[in-house]
Image 1 (cartoon, rainbow, N blue to C red):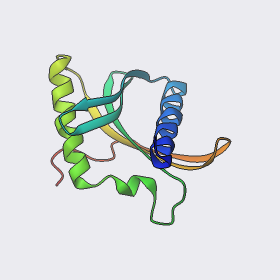
Image 2: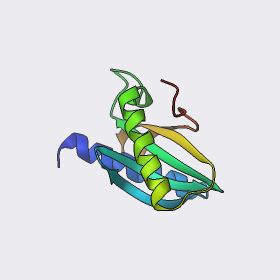
Image 3: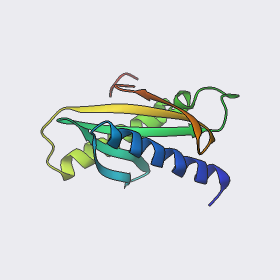
Image 4: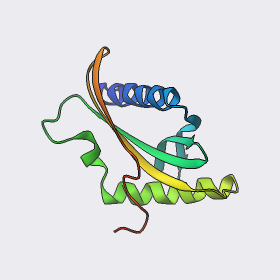
Length: 122
Protein backbone atom coordinates (compact mmCIF):
# COMPACT_ATOMS: atom_id res chain seq x y z
CA UNK A 1 0.00 0.00 0.00
CA UNK A 2 1.36 3.43 -0.90
CA UNK A 3 1.77 6.28 1.54
CA UNK A 4 -1.22 8.08 -0.05
CA UNK A 5 -3.37 4.94 0.32
CA UNK A 6 -2.30 4.60 3.96
CA UNK A 7 -3.25 8.24 4.56
CA UNK A 8 -6.62 7.71 2.89
CA UNK A 9 -7.37 4.58 4.93
CA UNK A 10 -6.42 6.35 8.16
CA UNK A 11 -8.71 9.25 7.21
CA UNK A 12 -11.58 6.85 6.61
CA UNK A 13 -11.00 5.28 10.04
CA UNK A 14 -11.10 8.73 11.66
CA UNK A 15 -14.28 9.60 9.75
CA UNK A 16 -15.99 6.34 10.79
CA UNK A 17 -15.11 6.96 14.42
CA UNK A 18 -16.37 10.55 14.19
CA UNK A 19 -19.70 9.43 12.73
CA UNK A 20 -20.10 6.60 15.25
CA UNK A 21 -19.33 9.02 18.09
CA UNK A 22 -22.15 11.22 16.76
CA UNK A 23 -24.65 8.36 16.89
CA UNK A 24 -24.56 7.27 13.25
CA UNK A 25 -24.96 3.62 12.27
CA UNK A 26 -22.33 2.51 9.76
CA UNK A 27 -23.90 0.20 7.16
CA UNK A 28 -21.06 -0.25 4.65
CA UNK A 29 -17.48 0.86 4.12
CA UNK A 30 -15.67 0.99 0.80
CA UNK A 31 -18.80 -0.22 -1.02
CA UNK A 32 -18.14 -0.72 -4.73
CA UNK A 33 -20.40 -0.48 -7.73
CA UNK A 34 -19.00 -0.44 -11.24
CA UNK A 35 -16.22 2.20 -11.26
CA UNK A 36 -17.41 3.88 -8.05
CA UNK A 37 -16.47 3.31 -4.44
CA UNK A 38 -18.47 4.87 -1.62
CA UNK A 39 -16.22 5.36 1.39
CA UNK A 40 -18.99 5.17 3.99
CA UNK A 41 -22.70 4.41 3.80
CA UNK A 42 -24.44 5.18 7.07
CA UNK A 43 -27.70 6.12 8.71
CA UNK A 44 -28.00 9.48 10.45
CA UNK A 45 -31.29 8.95 12.24
CA UNK A 46 -33.64 7.89 9.46
CA UNK A 47 -31.52 9.44 6.66
CA UNK A 48 -29.37 7.24 4.44
CA UNK A 49 -26.07 9.08 3.92
CA UNK A 50 -23.37 8.44 1.33
CA UNK A 51 -20.09 9.87 2.63
CA UNK A 52 -17.00 10.70 0.61
CA UNK A 53 -13.86 11.08 2.74
CA UNK A 54 -10.90 13.12 1.49
CA UNK A 55 -7.69 13.17 3.51
CA UNK A 56 -4.63 15.32 2.84
CA UNK A 57 -1.44 15.97 4.79
CA UNK A 58 -1.50 19.71 3.97
CA UNK A 59 -3.66 22.36 2.32
CA UNK A 60 -0.90 23.42 -0.07
CA UNK A 61 -3.04 22.48 -3.08
CA UNK A 62 -6.39 23.26 -1.43
CA UNK A 63 -8.83 21.95 1.16
CA UNK A 64 -9.47 18.19 1.01
CA UNK A 65 -13.18 18.61 0.23
CA UNK A 66 -12.32 20.68 -2.86
CA UNK A 67 -11.04 17.48 -4.50
CA UNK A 68 -14.52 15.97 -4.88
CA UNK A 69 -15.14 16.92 -8.49
CA UNK A 70 -18.24 16.63 -10.65
CA UNK A 71 -17.19 13.28 -12.15
CA UNK A 72 -16.78 11.79 -8.65
CA UNK A 73 -20.18 13.17 -7.64
CA UNK A 74 -21.77 11.47 -10.65
CA UNK A 75 -20.10 8.16 -9.78
CA UNK A 76 -21.35 8.46 -6.20
CA UNK A 77 -24.90 9.17 -7.37
CA UNK A 78 -24.82 6.10 -9.62
CA UNK A 79 -23.52 3.93 -6.79
CA UNK A 80 -26.14 5.36 -4.43
CA UNK A 81 -28.90 4.45 -6.90
CA UNK A 82 -27.61 0.88 -7.11
CA UNK A 83 -27.34 0.61 -3.32
CA UNK A 84 -30.84 1.97 -2.80
CA UNK A 85 -32.20 -0.58 -5.26
CA UNK A 86 -30.27 -3.36 -3.53
CA UNK A 87 -31.75 -2.57 -0.10
CA UNK A 88 -35.21 -1.60 -1.40
CA UNK A 89 -34.68 1.97 -0.18
CA UNK A 90 -37.68 4.02 0.94
CA UNK A 91 -36.35 6.88 3.03
CA UNK A 92 -34.46 10.18 2.66
CA UNK A 93 -30.89 10.27 1.35
CA UNK A 94 -28.03 12.73 1.53
CA UNK A 95 -24.49 13.12 0.18
CA UNK A 96 -21.88 14.33 2.69
CA UNK A 97 -18.16 15.03 2.44
CA UNK A 98 -15.70 14.72 5.30
CA UNK A 99 -12.40 16.51 4.73
CA UNK A 100 -9.47 15.66 6.97
CA UNK A 101 -6.10 17.37 7.21
CA UNK A 102 -3.88 14.79 8.88
CA UNK A 103 -0.79 16.09 10.64
CA UNK A 104 -0.18 13.02 12.84
CA UNK A 105 -2.12 10.49 14.93
CA UNK A 106 -2.79 13.03 17.68
CA UNK A 107 -3.33 16.09 15.52
CA UNK A 108 -5.75 16.34 12.62
CA UNK A 109 -8.51 18.67 11.50
CA UNK A 110 -11.88 17.27 10.44
CA UNK A 111 -14.53 19.19 8.53
CA UNK A 112 -17.93 17.57 7.98
CA UNK A 113 -20.03 19.00 5.14
CA UNK A 114 -23.59 17.63 5.30
CA UNK A 115 -25.58 17.95 2.06
CA UNK A 116 -22.34 18.72 0.23
CA UNK A 117 -23.98 18.26 -3.15
CA UNK A 118 -27.30 17.29 -4.66
CA UNK A 119 -27.80 14.91 -7.59
CA UNK A 120 -28.49 16.75 -10.79
CA UNK A 121 -26.78 20.03 -9.83
CA UNK A 122 -24.40 19.69 -12.78
